[in-house]
Amino acid sequence: MPSPLRIAVLASGRGSNFATLLAARDRGELSVEFVLVASDKADAGAVQLAQMAGIPTLVLDPRDYAERRDYDFALFERVAASKPDLLVLAGFMRIIDGDALKPWVGRMINIHPSLLPKYRGLHTHRRAIKAGDAEHGASVHYVTAELDGGPVIAQTVLRIKAGDNEKTLAERLLPLEHQLLLAVVTLITAGRLTLDQNSVTFDNALLHKPLRMQGGTLVR
Ligand code: GRF
Image 1 (tube, rainbow, N blue to C red):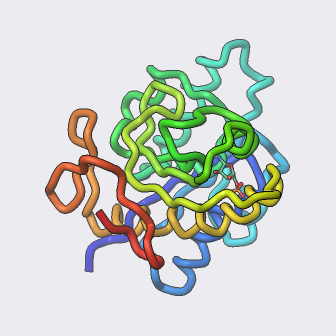
Image 2 (spheres, rainbow, N blue to C red):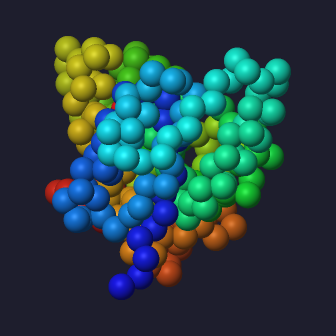
Image 3 (cartoon, helix red, strand yellow):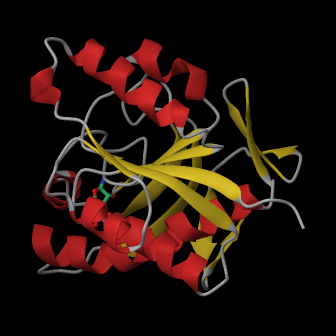
């Protein structure tokens, strides 16, 4: 049996996306080893979850560094020391220096709560409602130097209902995000996804548009 994919998770918040991956591993449905959970916030739920699960953690406080770039290089040096095959940004709320992340391009994914390329950055639910969009969703993409701008691997879509507000929309989207992230990581563990130049390859064929979540699975 091949050895499990070594994953480092970067998270700033409650960690429900990480919790989903952890639960899948515990059920024996995801062949991964969590080698590190790193955070910029000492009180991040993701860090607490990792500690309870006996996974190594790292908290680096950006306030201890003069420049964002210094912080990012320090962080990625420590992350590299855990020898991950894949970095998963699961609610990591920082913009990362392009040079610091360069060695990880193709080995780092992010989950973002919008149908990219729409609504990069923050307040995505609010912006989708304000724009009068009929649909909203989440994307998992490879991370490149461009904020929320790397090649999109897969998306999940939901309809915006009349009367939806930022909170209700976020709540309905969250379980779909979890399902999406788990599905993408599962494909990566199976070696079915790669980044070639700036394009996503799925089962050795170029992906012309993101995979879509349908009935619990990802389809072309
Ligand atoms: C998710 O909505 C993710 O898309 C966004 O931040 C949130 C993280 O949630 N970038 P959690 O910390 O995984 O619960």
